[in-house]
Amino acid sequence: MSSPADSKSCDTSKMEWPELVGCTIKEAKERIKADRPDLNVVVTPVGTGVDKMINPDRVRLWVDIVAEVPKIG
Image 1 (cartoon, rainbow, N blue to C red):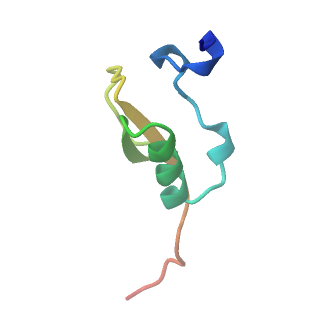
Image 2: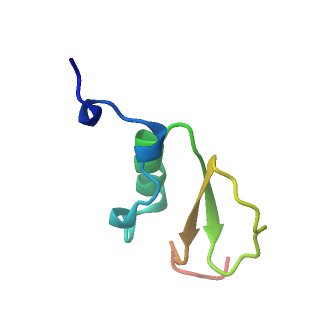
């Protein structure tokens, strides 16, 4: 016989990933998709205007980085 702790319900699905702060975008997306393959991961630059609608199938990955040296060319 299984106990309630043995089964996972949608109420206990992971909803936050504080451990991903400081990871690369690729690492963060892969980890979120591994934990919750049902979600659509959307990369969004900090400061971008977004709709305020709640979408239970979406997680926003807010990014504020310069990935390469800016240069002319």
